[in-house]
Image (tube, rainbow, N blue to C red; front, side, top):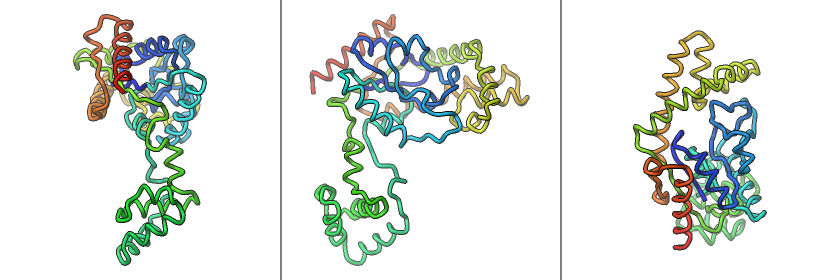
Length: 310
């Protein structure tokens, strides 16, 4: 099960209620909640919320550690397998679209087994002798991949040979590792949460004000003292980079907060654009529902309806 939506729409409250009713555990799909010590600015679920429903992939690395979508994909799939093996229901929840896609659809990343020089050599060979010659070679080293790739599909044949030559492993093994391109759950249901724009933007503004009241400035100061300035000023560290500028005397706190609100609204718009391009997502307008319980009931009804139709 997957629940997505823009920041501040209400994913945390609804997903916790849904997970508690399903006997599930949540795999956080948020590119910033993986970082330790960044609690207020990333709107992590509270300790009491995490006590109610187990959460995974929160507080995984320090802010200055390298973390990317490939590592997230690996950790998320492992968490999903573990949850399912214990008879619980995995619920992937978050707003980082690329991370969701990496888990749900599965794909090899461009840097896995990449060798531009070898690729050029294989492309030249395919041009001279034809793709079927390379396909015959692929059948020797990776018969599983050869059966799945057409003899004239030069691009995919070259990619498979490149991966085998550079990693020593068949590309078909990587396909299996990534779940063959499918999420490692028997049946997939994707739910999107949304509100009308004015209501969403008002929630964003209130959340930003609440973060300041909860101590975002002090949290940012402590992170700077730990030596995490580079991480905080990176483009994706929304909320922190603006407070860093305030702490450096480059703007007032009021100006920093207004910039956070503006940038967060723009980020929410980008999230919606990404998710709306996925036709598998069933949308729930939270603005038409009176409570979290009602929203969870609606989401569960959609999930059960989709599962029954599969």
